[in-house]
Image (cartoon, rainbow, N blue to C red):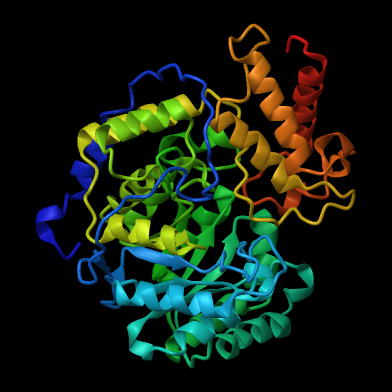
Length: 470
């Protein structure tokens, strides 16, 4: 960091992280409460937001001074006040402009988008908003999102790449990523980037100055991550985007067996002096919507801070992190994150231990590691997969998933789950209509066995309906 007095070296940080490893999980108390805010999960912090206190990190390759808070442009607001990630409603360009203006005014200068975000509309909306500012005021990151096999050809991939320039209204891209490598394993990597010569093409584009930094975002198969890093001396990766939060640091495989602990991913980047860009600091929003017991424990230590801010402080405390991405749909989310990073107050050893306890406690509950990315949709049989998972996870966070019919709160929790389920998901789109066709499974970047989770949730629902033991 630029502020030396707030900097801890890498070894000291890792030593602090180790302090909480042996802490045993504590029992969680069930509770109900309002969790309407999709990001904050509780009231956000209050107070003035300075315009000149943003924490910055320096890219060792280019000298870029990058804001520690990066704006993820995958959830732009719509005119109906929803997220364009989940809705086909028109993007509210005026509100996007206001959010971008406010972010830049308060020191944010890294904006991350993709041809795939907001159902294909994010780059255009982002380009309109940013083009109103001097080009040197911001760094734009976008991706070559050639997921569909029909876009794997050299011609189609290059056409997608060049269209990003038009949509973003730029003549160079600051940070260009191979999008979601690891999804589909080595076969997809070869088809998307290697056999068609696209990786070589992008390296040449970097030499020509049309790409300033070349990297990749990683999900899934660790063989692909290790392979690309093994070619670092040849390619010279400028940055890599990974999933990192206080659960995934050491417990990623407990959440999802296909995931890799962030401790390993980050460590491999540190060995090679490759800056890390962080995605999913809130684990798909779940670290902003803790159950009442866990929320109370964090509030006891920092009563004026939002629960979300703990996760953002954790991710930002790693010294080799260049920026931490947050998809901010509403102004209150942007303001809360600005308070966290303007300036950053790094996690203390005691706080790291508390967050490890929190992670261990969360793992005692069988939530589904869905980040609502929508890649599984549409379901050919009409299921609303993300909404089913969202309701189930929400009830876990609010204590409305009783572990036994003998639980003290069984009757109220049973009613809350079943009534809420019917309200959140139309009956014809609920889990009992899953036939196990598996068409959704290869599209999930989190590697969720979606049909198996549907069966588990449906069994649970049927048990609640019968009022039976389970």
